[in-house]
Image (cartoon, rainbow, N blue to C red; front, side, top):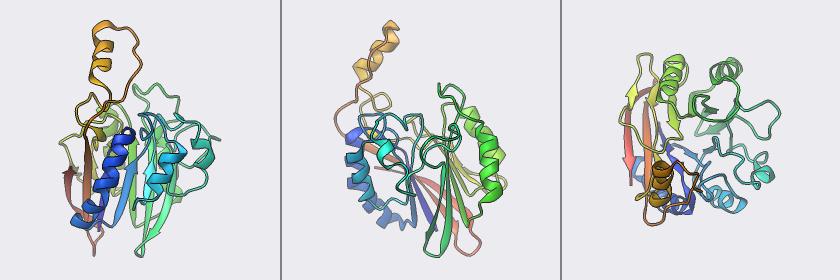
Length: 255
C-alpha cells in the first residue's frame, strides 16, 4: 500500500503542474491512495467552482482545505456535495462541510481527517487535539490519515507525538516549504512536518517576490500577488507492508 500526499496547490500554475505530473507520479510510484491540499488553488486563496471541477477530473481520492477554506464564495455551492472534499474538523460547529471522510477503496477503509492549528493562524477554531480524539473514538478504518494545517512546527510535532500509534499517517501543510524530517515514529505513525507546495518555483511561498519583499522592508500592508513562471510539485509517499498494514518507508517525490 502506497499513500501519496501532495503539498498545497498554489494558484492556477500549481493546478496546471498537478494536472501534468499527478498521473505520472501515481503510475511510477504505484500509488494506491492520493490526498491533495487544495485550499490555495484559486488565485492563491480558496477554491472556485471552475478549479474544483478540474480537480474532480483528476485521480484524487481526498481534497483537504485549511485557513483559506472560505476564500472564495463558490465553496458554499459544492462543499456539501462531495465526500472527497473536507475542511478542518475543528472549525466552529455548524459551518458547512465535513471535517473528515471515510473512503472505501480496493477493499480497504480509509479515514482522512483535516485539522487546523491554533498557533499563529489568526483563525478562531476549536482545540484540534480534543477534536481528533472525538473523531477517533467513533470512527475506525484500516488506514487513518491526518492533514494538520498549521503554522507552528512545535504544534505539528506535538500533534505527531499525541497521535503516534493511533493514526497511520500525519503530515503538515500550510507553510509551503517542504521539510526534511520525514520519519517513522516510535509507535508506527508516518510523519513529516510539512509537505511543501505545488506552485510557482521562483516565489516566496507562491507569492510574487517583489510584492512580498515590500511587506518585509517597509511594514506597509501590500496586497499579495501570485508569482508567475514555472511551478514545482512537492509530495510525499508513505509506503506500508500490505500484510501487517504497518508503515515501512517514507520518501519525498518532487517534480
